[in-house]
Image (cartoon, rainbow, N blue to C red; front, side, top):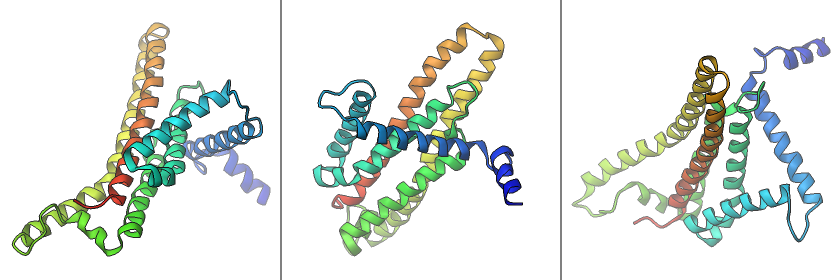
Length: 227
């Protein structure tokens, strides 16, 4: 009974959707590569270690330049993990026989929601009750109370829209790329798909960076002082 249920989970795509299985595969690949690189770190990097060091340094600079040295290093693991994970998931869709997990809205939402909660958890942790000042606008006086109330609702709606926009932006770009590849693959099976595959690599890289950049800016806005 248990063996039959396990086989259903492995074989039946209706039980385990492809975006879930490929998402787990991407996690396993990243963990395995990290362990291998950690066990063979060299003073003069080369090969895979060199590629990962370039990515890590770029994400560290991104975090420190936008959030500051202290909080940049605090959020760096989250930002770097998000970038590398989304990048790998995007590239998986370019491999024949594979599917990109980020072409499913459930997958992109699972990346956006933790960023949303991390933003407000750290905002409250840093500013305590003063975090509400981030939602009241620049004018804070009794005369500006109606404007402050209006700004509060506008800011709340804007913050609630962030995980939606993060999810839909990544999902929309990835699904559009796959549709274009399929259509052009049918019309011109050799020349155009090759060019689109090259463009797909660029799109995957840009979308991973945009997601990581927006997450960085959201976190930076939460921990900085309200103006």
